[in-house]
Length: 266
Length: 211
Picture 1 (cartoon, rainbow over the protein chains, first blue to last red):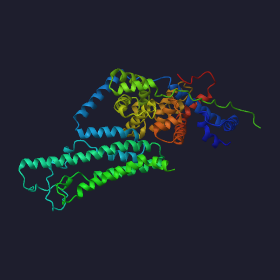
Picture 2: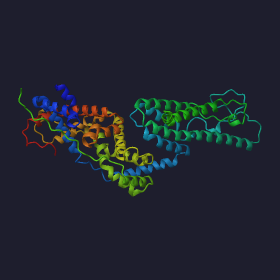
Picture 3: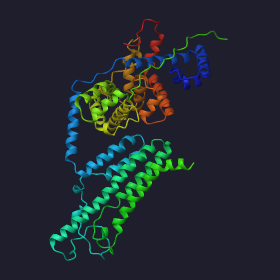
Picture 4: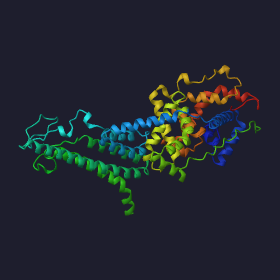
């Protein structure tokens, strides 16, 4: 055994991890090599000093617990001020986070996609809220920005408000349903994910992030064509988002049950 | 054939530290914590406060240890509802603590070294006479390591965790944990070179290895 071999194995030797034959050979080298023996003794001393540090535990200051309670209280107050949308997001986030450890960069991308998607308080952003987007006339081409209010089909004002509310509620309800399904499926998929190799986990994370981004890229747009209120209208925007959701759902379903199916087939 | 010149270094047996297991009494405690019961939360805090604070202190440094430890426990209590018990409670808490400490250090910048005002002065080589307080020098040297090396030394050499446990906490492979430890120890030896040489030249019994 050369000095180089010893140097490479010294950590394992000192932790008692080497097999008896190698240990013996290493000790044999140490008996005759002053330099390596010195190195081994140095390492043994350092490890000993570090282990002794465990016997001198560090007590935190007495007020630490009160500070922790205070910060918990502050966090709860913040939660109380959030919109219901964000509370749902927090539940989702709590379910997902234990499985997404900060080490992996791709996992972080997936996390960021989720966080962005579950942003709170949409009204605070510049994009118009559901209620502000007016019903479009059926044969208008889809416009990238919100158009100035277009005269709606003739209807008494009270009825128009009802239609708007119905559109908003219905679209949000369907969207929320998808979100709930995704939340449940993600939990199942992540259980499976925990059993995979690192490479497979990384490719799963990347695909998950991509699919979430695809949903995000198709904001929920309310127009008169949604939900059969104008069957001849342009369904593009609403359907595109729904298709994006469906792709995400399918992906998660395959991840969650795929292994079981493969096993059953064997 | 050369006569045996040196007594081989003793094997430093890993200290048998009981892994923090999630036993049935822990389950009861966790359930009570999830319900927000104050006494249960306080009991959990006291059970882990030294490990968490010690880890934060040794990785993030004395100045920030309190702040980081607060953050860790807030994450523990907020994260308990989502903790599924598929890893040991202690491992989970260690993981939160290491992640919080390392993030803190990363955000602080300065290459992970603890700040100069926190640094215990490592004596210059010519001063490295037979200083019995190797432990102090070891602590000072640790402060000069990159934070990642400090983390593996704290977990494996101070807390006495196995490489499997370290790998779980650090989210890496067991092989990575072992090689990180190897490099961390090599760096420590490099930093402590003069002090250790002085130790070696001292006759037995005249030096005190730890305080």
